[in-house]
Image 1 (cartoon, rainbow, N blue to C red):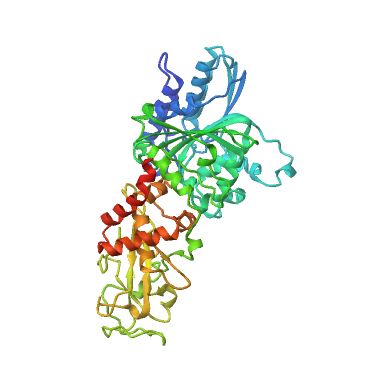
Image 2: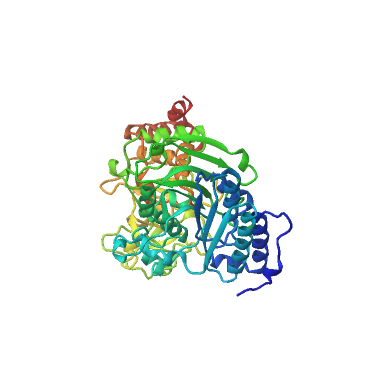
Length: 548
């Protein structure tokens, strides 16, 4: 499917391969729809980023075998070839292998690679290329099998694998997911499969250079992947783009992205990791730099296998504070769960006003003081504010009341002390963690008491003590910590998503329980439960340590 006369677009005299690749890519991008690009996960790499990624390569040798598993217009391959031609005089031969599945893009990639080969040969470097039109994951699925030796297939090894892979989630029954079940869980994003297969295909001592979303750095869905990938690849460099908008701005992508460079090694890592960061492309050349011990960044000795990305002195100090804490919610008998009310499934039980005359009230339910039987408050994400639960706050389609009945009973939870925590934040929200305290109302405090039950919508997490209840000072102390700059900073060091995962929060280190109680008691004594006062009290506890 050649939808435009790509062969009529010839390189200009003295045009570099990377410049030619970019020009061809822009022509393709203007000729296909946004839906086409989204379906194929196409987010073309800007020249500045391609050149930066290429500059990370340290491989030198007479023959260099290069793989780009999702080549697009070939801009990364060109950037790497130009870099090697410039800095590695000993390189006399380059062999390129590229994969591309979009039929509309294949002619673009072929034309780019043909020009690249001619360009290199003019510089006395022998070059050849192989452009594969099949699916990269399925073509190498055997490399991820535990019993791959039984297949008697020799795995082709590469010196350098460089890639900006496609980004989109795969359905669980997709053959690529089935082939990669050793390293994935649930509905994986395809970019992680590209990384996993590449980790199998790079030779010992070879290098991987990837730009991807940073979502694999934490979270339960990527635990198997991190376990597999970081056992094979030792990171040496990571660059974080702090802005969600600038990296792939022309493709209207809102992703927090990271570039990594790592080496295939079976030896336990000892060298430190260099972490750099920039807002976007504009300040890429002025990126800040930090050097960290390897195991401070890639933690394979915990169940979560988290990849941390601190980028400043303050973030480094925050990370050290959390590393000194050895307790989690479980150690304090505290649990976190996700709200049970999925609104579209529970629509018949949700009401805009506290009226319902057809409800069957459980025998053990307490009659509501207002005389309206079987109605409980329902708390949504928009009710949860920092250190404050606002209810009722009517919104179209988000009824603030929930029936208490035999059918709705499994969706409700006992009315006791909780902390409510938003499961999602907006992409550019200043605060990733937004938590509110909840205490059961005293008689006559509000219109509905809920017969001893309340409802929590599915986009809200709730923190509680399964055996017993959270004390008031525990609720206030934990809530203050979760809303603090300290905890928000730590969370952002390893989480680049808008999703606040209950799994990650269960594993999050907590200070000694005495400190949590003390913070809560101080908030109570002050008579001021505002987020400003809570954050001030938390800072008084920890700012001196951070400032040392």
